[in-house]
Length: 172
Picture 1 (cartoon, one colour):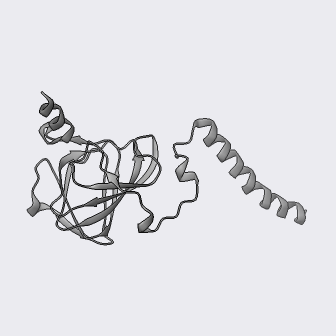
Picture 2 (cartoon, one colour):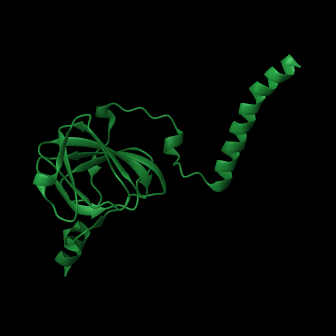
Picture 3 (cartoon, helix red, strand yellow):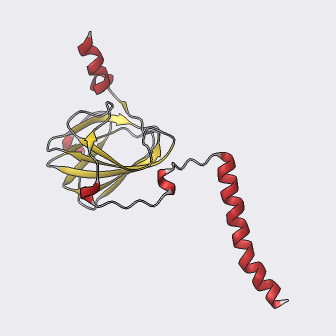
């Protein structure tokens, strides 16, 4: 019986893993194809582009993994120039931010108040839970990494702060 028990201890985890993978495929895993593949980047490999229209212009973004516009996990980097500000806003999912370089400042609440914010230096980390009102700014050139579950959406506390609304009103 001892060899049978050893075989069972070897086979059981394998069966559990296969059943779990099959269940995820049947349910439609929330992971994007990119997060299921091996990815490795050095900073010089990143492809930077303009931030999406929901963020104030002037910063650059690079997608490392996933697709922030779709359901599933994603990781992006944001390169913000000195003085870049994101007015108070919320997200329907948690936002996880790691400071890669520079100083990134964050605050919570309905009103942008630099005195009430916290400066995070390279290596700093913050989690903004879903629905939490918060704002951010960079004192100097800063790079942050954001990861979370997509689709990434942003809703400004004051609709007049939304850059998408500014573009609409400029056309009228």
